[in-house]
Image (cartoon, rainbow, N blue to C red; front, side):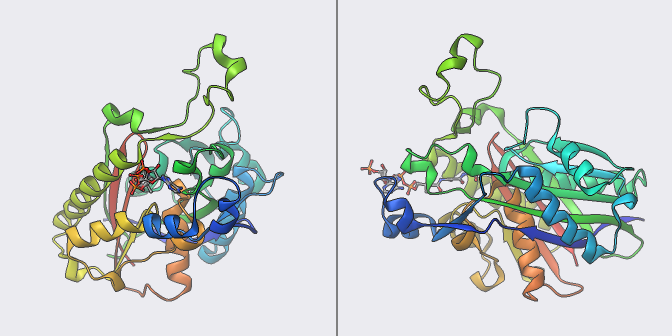
Length: 326
Ligand code: UT7
């Protein structure tokens, strides 16, 4: 049976660094509070002229190079993002043009911070059914453009960046073994950024009424995140008939170190088996897992034959997991 395999990864982080001490000058916060409550030390901020598609293209080119896949060989470009360049056309369309991937269909996928896992599940189906041979899946975000820079409860959390993977078919037993995705829209108001729900009559007051920025019920989101990430990770293990001892590396969505520690406890997994880079980048939403995956591979944290567990959580609320045999 054909499995979908990740054959190349790439990432791109904007150069500008915004540290906790910089934030102390912007809102009533402290490095100490941010470090203790989240583990984040700094995050990257895109340049004024950079777009979400620009970041995605840079990450994609690296993934394509590693997979030895040329632009014209890509059949599908899937972009997970909550910070699309435009409402339409899709960010994927800009990326398709930027890469000159003339043979690729391209569309965006919206599942907030779980977007990459949802993307993996879509890519997996297209590859397994042999509809497509080479898929470019990208998580790319410029969260800094939808953050309320006067709200200390959210502005310290997010950052910008992009991660990309190439997915192709294989007849070996190494590839995406399983994907699990969930949504519960009854929690929609826990974490959202407004869109076309804003009535025309209020559009002039977008900024005043904060109708154009992220809103989050942090505490409530935290609890649902820990519960559901724990559950969906266990579900993936059971599906593959694996135990946590079989897992070589866990790559969780990088939202908050305390959320990750709580999941480690639930799964009874030692911290050395869990990849964390949120201290450098904050929460880059759909980009967080592919960036971490690329860094884990570049720093030799993953070897051939390893079992890697991916698990994420985000607005929707959405959550999901995947186990990949490398
Ligand atoms: O990416 C996917 C989804 N998002 C998440 O997973 C985020 C989930 N939630 C969280 O990570 C945490 O809830 C936060 C990091 C957002 C907040 O941490 P917390 O421990 O839940 O803090 P809290 O909201 O209970 O706030 C505690 C106190 C409050 O002050 P009072 O009411 O106790 O006086 C806040 O006003 O900390 C205050 N506070 C801050 N103080 C300094 C909130 N933000 C800040 C800040 N600096 N940046």
